[in-house]
Image 1 (cartoon, one colour):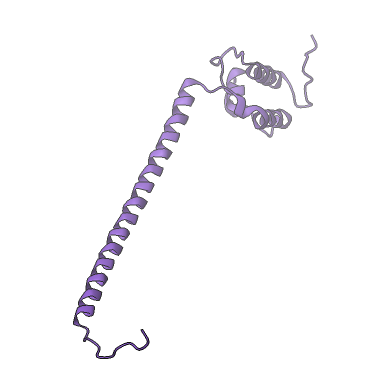
Image 2 (cartoon, one colour; image 1 turned 90 degrees about the horizontal axis):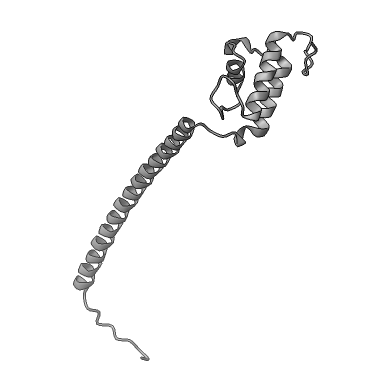
Length: 145
């Protein structure tokens, strides 16, 4: 019985199984993996019922290229599993917490510099007032005023 998918010169049952699994994953109707599983090389092999190490670029270069092209083109549009979404959200939260801590540290450093500058301004103002008070009165009067 002829297959709908043309086999490459190295093709055979394994490549046919990989291609059918790839098509099922693209359509979102896998048989072995959970519905909505992302298209990855490993998932294509698992959906085919084979070990992921069997899907090698050296054995199936055209198929691997097709999978990578599809992932590059449509990978961002693939639905995420709930655990993947939670993991991604945790990573975003962790990154945001780290940014908050860095900003707090910057704020604290800026406030310390501001307090130090205010202290120096006060010190110099008081020194200026002291020097102004000890300045001898001049006996020179202004002319033309």
